[in-house]
Length: 220
Image 1 (tube, rainbow, N blue to C red):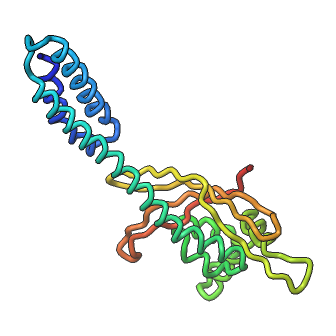
Image 2: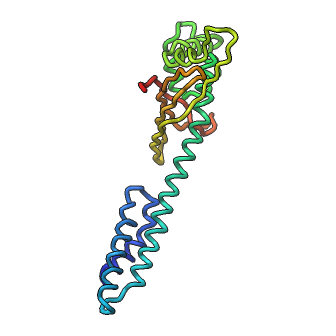
Image 3: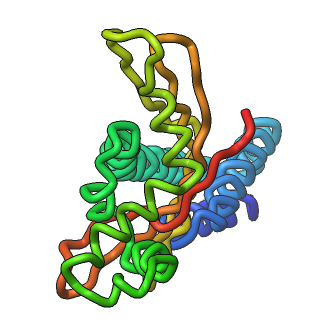
């Protein structure tokens, strides 16, 4: 059976799926060719051979197809955990009004953009960080998050939780960036959503990690 040979060749090429997710068509094609070949061989009543080749091609297709899917899922969970480790503390800092500390979780470009909005005193190193933090406090997202923790009744314990509801990661050999949406909800039922873009920083003066680059409030 010619198809059994095709199935085996495609099965041997199936590891290419780890090079690019787009090549997932190879194990699918291998599995399809193998199934058709086995069906024709069975119907030929001994007039066609190649069942062993078709089964090998099918086995390779299943192994590498499932392996590729598992690898993608593991990568997704890893990225989710990595971004959570940066975004949730950052959102907590904004809710608590700790804008100075929040700057440490932001990209140099994001901090520089805030710094550009400060007064001439920003040129003085002593005032630079404080003024930049004050500029962050004026941000619409920071103000909305702070309101989630604001109570008109004193004393009232307000707890805000954060849930990642969407994550898209674009990773290449040169750069990585992630776009995610977080839902912030307090125990009084008030909630909002924040769209956040992170970039991967790996400069010599910083430990490799994700940093907050852009953010905005999004509609529910």
